[in-house]
Image (cartoon, rainbow, N blue to C red; front, side):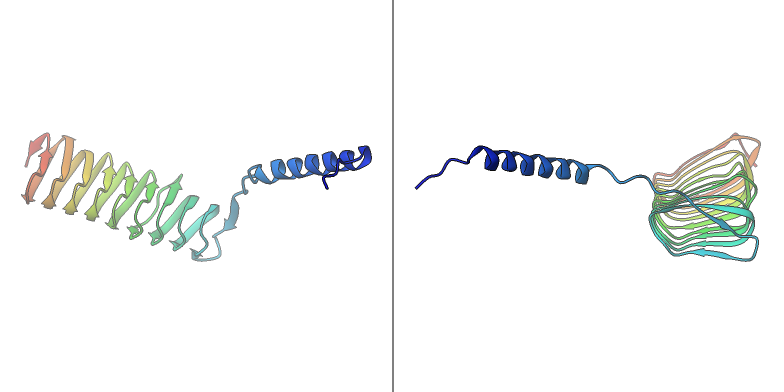
Length: 200
């Protein structure tokens, strides 16, 4: 036998349905963005193993080691920076020491560094004063103003300098562009494009 809900029962059903709808709407709302974690690195080296976090490092850092993935890190300066995790974005507002990147899909921006070594793929370095760089991997990019030596070992890497004293390319499909000054060039491999202002 079928039954029709009485008025009170019908009202209760409507209330429950409305509550369920509101609950579903609340559950669908995005979680609030997490705040950046601030660390004082004046006391010594900093190692970050956590993933999916934003970090602000204050003070003059010594060694900064980033093992976690999906990180965004902002710092003032550091004696060394090592990136081993993937999808890590580093921004330094001051000069930093030697840089080593072994985690792919990462980026680093700083006004100056004495050297950088990239042993990974899809890494973007933007350091105006980068004296020496070594790229081992593929699809990496370096943009700088001036430097002494760049060595490229891999494929599909791109290097842009305003002035560069020497470039060595070993690999295929790499592109190097130097806009001014004299540059010593050594190239081996297929389909490499090296354009310098003047060969020295």
